[in-house]
Length: 449
Image 1 (cartoon, rainbow, N blue to C red):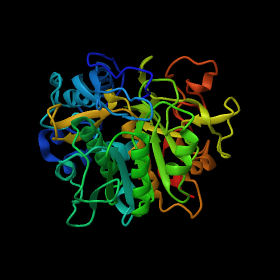
Image 2 (image 1 turned 30 degrees about the vertical axis):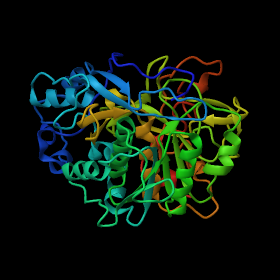
Image 3 (image 1 turned 135 degrees about the vertical axis):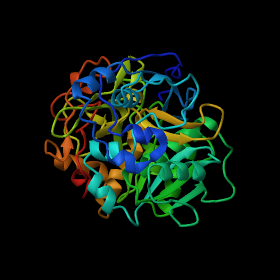
């Protein structure tokens, strides 16, 4: 979240014309992955009926961290749904032939209300890779403060969806401080705990065979978060997701060299949640900047469609031309002489958001729906993990550019995240654009190199 704007306020409602997740009512009733995997719509319910129903989706959100970052600090890029009806819920209601349920303000549900693993794997052509790849790879999540319930909440999410256990005892999950300590952890924070749950669940949904390393910075300062990135790399992670951001500054070049320049390592960063405008570390030339889309079911061969996520002038995916960072050699757009955000994108609209389990704090414990580019950053980091270890000395942000315009990426061509003097900085088009970059994954081949 950029420091020049106020945090998101509860009470902003949106209307989304979309189709929803491909899980059945059995999954909502708690039958887990087996039910969700059999996601076909019953023959008595037409696609048009469901499309009409999900067009009614509307949600109320709040920024998970609930604070505006000050200079030199970052805020998480997570939006939690606190009220209304998601597209997923509208779909389930149509399938069951009942009125849709409503999320109560500042409360969570006893069952998921957002997209789950099979939905995301279906949308991005990842089902085969997710079942067979990722073993031995470690995706690191960098966030501020401690989530005391991280391991337990991760276990609940994975159990519900029928994913293999990922625990400290079996070596799959590890939580450390920015110094690598497993015992001397930062102070707990309920807002960042929600962010942490979102990140861990997105890795689980996208790369269920991957190991997960959670590195907790002692504060949300860029120096502490950057130190946590270095610790993640030191501990062997080849994929590091950063679901946070702050205003760009003249210090960014020094942050680049000190924290985000790691050859042979994937570093992803959220593009932001406040609409058009650049933030850091997404503006770093060494990271993969990840924008956000609204993800909808569609009557197409793919079965899904995407557009730029945008709710208002102050809520939507970030994008733009960096004021400070140099342009990497693999970026060839001509309207921006410096670093352009974003590179690629994935689902981020809370109204078509993802299911998350979080039990720490009073701000909606249990099943929640989340959005924001905090969802898309760990998802993309995990796609890289499915694709395999990056080549030595490479900067993986460049990998998708070799597949630009091919079937390895879903080109997002509709929508805008605000007003800008150079159209593609804020408006989707065929080929590269700021809000969605080169597009979204269709399998893993655009993320190898």
